Length: 226
Image (cartoon, rainbow, N blue to C red; front, side, top):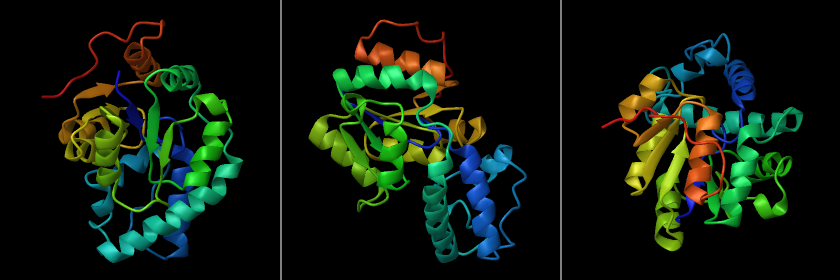
């Protein structure tokens, strides 16, 4: 059994409300009125589409977009202390099973301390990821995934955006997409993932099957792309 790698926000943790609030705050602070005014979390797919580093360049220059996402990360890290939940409940037990078996890693665009603290709310130390790579470590997401494949035999990356899918494939990994995160299902499908899982329960069942842990069978015939 090979190591699995997960994105954090939108996959293992539901941070959509925090992301939306901090997007609106950063937009106001920086007076970037050219960026869309998002009415709520349902509008997040508007900005989380395509290659994420270029997702705002429809409205602002790349350098401005980079500064925006840096400020957004600072705000979301600060707001994390007020998050009511840590790991999505259905996923705590499957993650513990993976930790006891093939192991798992997390590669995320959030800050290291923020992610570790949120994971630790619901996971014992034994159930924590073997490796946690964040925006605080150098290198692109593709570079980090490629290193995990080369050094630890990682086989798949689970993400929630088309950008995650592209990073997985660029690193030579199987790309698993979840449809309950930040991006629309249309954007995920356009990126060409190897498998789309609709709900956290579907991801939990898929993880249990990978780790050989008894549990509910995966949902029948999840959407595949060619």
